[in-house]
Length: 436
Ligand code: CMX
Image (tube, rainbow, N blue to C red; front, top):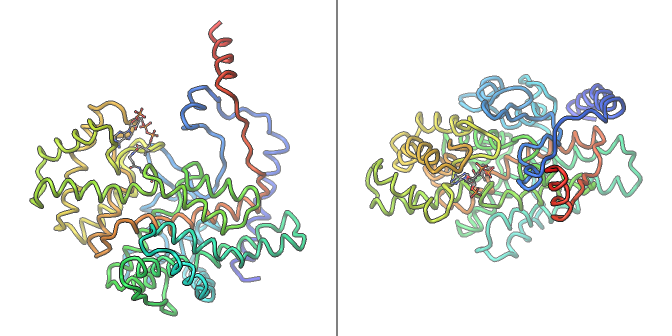
């Protein structure tokens, strides 16, 4: 067993009695109320899931293992000369629940290094798809094609004990996470760069390697680190995380689970929103003839979008009730590195203009910007202008948190997810009785 896996096993053994105690002694304790509003409203806010990897406070934003995002950026070890930490260190934090030291990050880097070669057939699968396919389709197909490598499936067929499920899952997770950046970069070259792919650099971290494969200079390595880190986890109720967990609860392996979560991430109300932001911004800038942002004209454009029945992409959130700290971190990065970028100036004026309009419009519970309002703009500045690709970048990050959750789901023996459905008639009956 590697040092990391060994240590994780110790953590799992220490944690298990807490789960057993809750299930055994407190199963009947009421946590929340299921109302018709919650059932009809996409279970918004219903407290019915468990994860210890991250927690989303509506007014504070996400905490990874108890740490706010600014703390995560500050506390995790960084490559020399970089502003942003190792993504591999973040993976360690999410898995172990503690901030790694330099040596522990080094061990994680080694784990990734020895697993990162992508099998040749994965490229062939991507090549077999039309190069006009959406990059998310290529990404999902590539991940699915590797399902044949699953250690979980192999050992499950041989008769794996339930308490050991986490072990081959851990192997699957590291095997797939280490390959995602190269798969994504290959998709980028296949879709947009006439197949001019650059393979992985040995001996560098995920951020630097991705920048190399995307053929980008500094600070794109930090852009990548920041992007993967802030997108990695957002509790377990969002569509991608919940999908990953749900699929995995049937003991489908990580390849099925991650491919499925990508399909949820691909929707315009979720991960595709960063692409939508760019599309929307481009049409705004076109109307403005590429001039410097003008508040009054922008207000008019925002109202036109709302009045035509569309949402303002990059604003609002199902849980958050303030500016997303993931937005703020990217804004700070942008103010430092790309403050004269015209697109960024537009985004910054929207930050000022949109919230009061959404408040006046009166529908959105949260008028503030979310992560997607900024992320595409940074990519655009550094030359990744093909916004169909942005959800793939989100997907690399999100795969990290979902995978950490799935390892722990297995370690703690979480069961098959199976809520109960009712018919409209049944709800009407319940409603009638409650009125009497
Ligand atoms: N622009 C216009 N209307 C909005 C809005 C926005 N940005 N955000 C919410 N609303 C509307 C909703 O469409 C809903 O209208 P209806 O009652 O007519 O259906 C109403 O306000 C209430 O919605 P809500 O409770 O505030 O928000 P939800 O939990 O239903 O949805 C979200 C959350 C993110 C889907 C929504 O805010 C939205 O569509 N935002 C734009 C798309 C976006 O940026 N998505 C990315 C979110 C981050 C992520 O998960 O990746």
